[in-house]
Length: 256
Ligand code: ZN
Ligand code: FE
View 1 (spheres, rainbow, N blue to C red):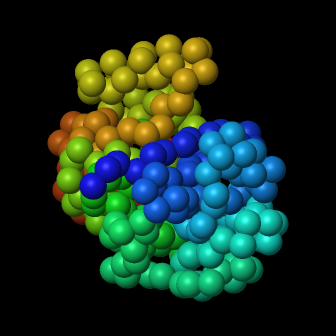
View 2 (view 1 turned 180 degrees about the vertical axis):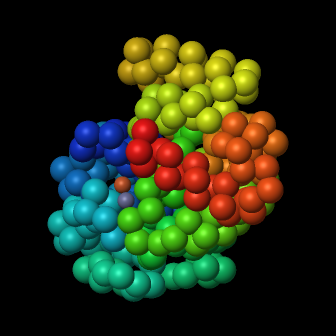
């Protein structure tokens, strides 16, 4: 089977939108839809005809353009089961462990409540791609607006169990700020230092730091490294649970 084509584009101040397209069937999926104009422009520039939208969570910067784009394209909208807040325009609702088919490929839904209680991720095993919404970012993770650190840590562990070569497409370009913070809790991590330098150069050239790989994140993203000895030592939390170490890292980032 051929690889799906991917078109990635920035929108609003720091969001990324993604279009997935299958040449054979002509099917096209958009991940989130936080700005109708940007998504319609992306569709125009690719000449792909939108057949579906996959919503990760209810926040406005992921849903604001949904109804307009749905009306203009007649596409189907898939999204999370309702938790804190309803999302207008959903046709099909999904939660942890659910699967659906896109262009003959399996899409697995992984729920990771924390940033919001309705957060879902879309994983395509055949493509080795994970669309992680506002859960997992390059060198970071989403702020906990609705869930607890324990919930978020449990969710992140589900993502950490995916194949290490998985490409992770987070929804925001927050990497430089994330890198600064990561270095504050993981000072001796040489790979993290190297990535930070690389990311500064990439951003100077206007390049996206998304996607990343799970393997690189496991080695450098402090939010996935609650079990790491040197981070635990730096936080003076040698005997705490991983969830408690994660909670402390998240709290420090909120106050950074
Ligand atoms: Zn969000
Ligand atoms: Fe967001």
